[in-house]
Image (cartoon, rainbow, N blue to C red):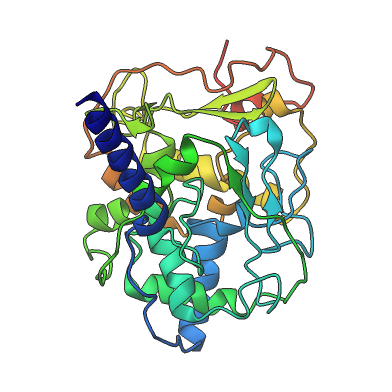
Length: 338
């Protein structure tokens, strides 16, 4: 009898392992479509890439010594191996997004690229590591995701061989359960707060500015901050509270103060940001978002004013010493006062 039970258990485990290995992630064939690169579509795709979805932050060669990790000239979209100091479970690689046919996306169909962006499925059916924010990008409208793909096709093709992503157990199993098929997505709502909600989603605001426990957002605490990111072995950054709580969030901010918080970094984005040590740097995409339109920033602010206020005081740079030689740097970079 014991033998039969053990045999049944082994069979069940084997069946479960086979299911995970061969049937997950659940996905459909990539849509068979070709995106036309119209002038308007390319302009929209460029704007999304550089200022909203900020794809280049991960998929480009960056200068890690400067504030905001600016893209190195000629490095946009070339992909990179994510730094070991981030504490990721293995070797995580942000793919080459340029149209190079051998090391980039030049040999992929538009449908395969769209599926990767919104569903987290690679061209070979593998699940993408969820540092790629496909859960947020699943909300990208059909028009916007097509604009993004059209623009990627215009990046200068760059041959840049990269290693494959290799994720350690148990995350390599967990990530197989995460991708979900995405149906057609309509355009963003036309009302200001509705459009702001859409922009906050596809920009990753909710993901980065919500606390997580066991890999999931804490229910009822959306946008309240406290999501901790490891920049390096000795440097953490913690997301700020974006809820309209008057004491610990943005409840007392005016619309103009919110806009100014982003646009103050336009000179950094246009020039060369200052050199900073890791404890003073930020994973917040200030450089890209500094170029977001005023209307889009107003829409995001209008939406954030509608979310549930949560009292949650956050120290955004817990490993940063108090003093800094760059005048006014603490305030400008969003470092919490001591």
